[in-house]
Image (cartoon, rainbow, N blue to C red; front, top):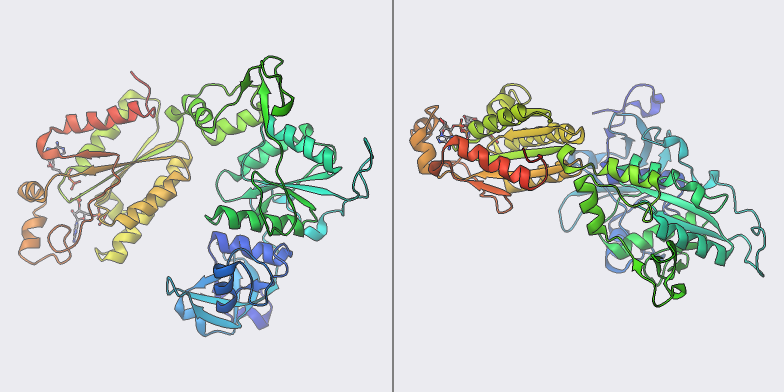
Length: 501
Ligand SMILES: Nc1ncnc2c1ncn2[C@@H]1O[C@H](COP(=O)(O)OS(=O)(=O)O)[C@@H](OP(=O)(O)O)[C@H]1O
Ligand SMILES: Nc1ncnc2c1ncn2[C@@H]1O[C@H](COP(=O)(O)OP(=O)(O)O)[C@@H](O)[C@H]1O
């Protein structure tokens, strides 16, 4: 793969590489100066020091390894063009080190970056700002009661919408610090538009002059290091304080933990708990209860969150009966996947109210995956393709029914992750024993496999990893097809994906 035409001649012959989503976010932040003092991807020594002790090799605190994974073939080059997923060149990496990750053994490239152009798409791209594009904090805010510190900027870096409680807390802390507020919606690739819209929707509830600047910062899976990184990002954007839910030592700028607030149901107002009369009723809506309301399509109460936020919450997590869902059947050849999947698709179409797409194993092999073999690599690719299509169907609120063998647990888990980012996922293991499948031998394939005419035949000469995470297990040797379909429908009704008839 070489970089696209349109590049300066000197770069046109360089190899190109499209980093994954987290690396691209890192690239954008590196190029924008948000990750200063970092100017490129880390080498082995820096990465090891960061992982072990949260510091670069020169002792500078840095919380997360910012690294770039590449295939081994790309490790022999001195320069590499980094591209977005569509092949648009973003930067040139000047390779200073090719190294192998000691845990995964995967290859990494380190080195400084030379920007070519800024990544220029994604929802709300027009709101993005480099730190140097943000106005400096203008002097002291209009002085209120007594001496306020000059030039304070309070950063609220969030992956969640702000409800009435957080809005009250932010107003209180900003007032105490005399600070301008900077809200950084942290984009992770999932429901980003909803998050930004929900935050724009409450701008008028935030102190005047509040800025909202989306920043691509997917979570790293370690709460503490995530918070440390947020503090670095906030500092790069000129923040003097970071609002957080927990105290933390060693942050780039001080963390401010707001005092607890609650809803005083007697006077119908959110306020600091310390200011609520002891005999007044305090109300809260737990995350769990909020999820239940959204799943059931019930309104989120106005006392909890402004209507603009409630509307975005409902859009990001629609009621289950209209939320996209993938029903993924897995099992041996002849176990009954196609029969039950087809029966389920028919039953759903008959009930109405849902759009249904059936991605049967055999049909996919003729269409999406024509030409693929039954090697492990090709089976995995086949399942990933099915997962990609199912995730898109799910994202658009449809029901995707898939019925491949999908013999490998890790690949099924990958599909579960892809789909779950877009909606819901139900795994049905059609567990009909091999003897029964072989007895049925509808296509005569088992006989051929036993005769050695089909190498790598699942269950005979190729593995099938039995799922331990199935939401439903169906042994069709002991039930009629209608009953098997009925079981899946029951599960979908019980789970709220279908309304009771
Ligand atoms: N070697 C080998 N192993 C398993 N199956 C084989 C093989 N060769 C051909 N077939 C036929 O292909 C169907 C399975 O394709 P899948 O796409 O579902 O398989 S996989 O998920 O990619 O493993 C499967 O269809 P089903 O019987 O519907 O499962 C078989 O008919
Ligand atoms: N309860 C059942 N559910 C599904 N199939 C059944 C059942 N009982 C018998 N069968 C038969 O088993 C065979 C299963 O084939 P198929 O649905 O193509 O399986 P797969 O897609 O897993 O290869 C069909 O001939 C079907 O009629």
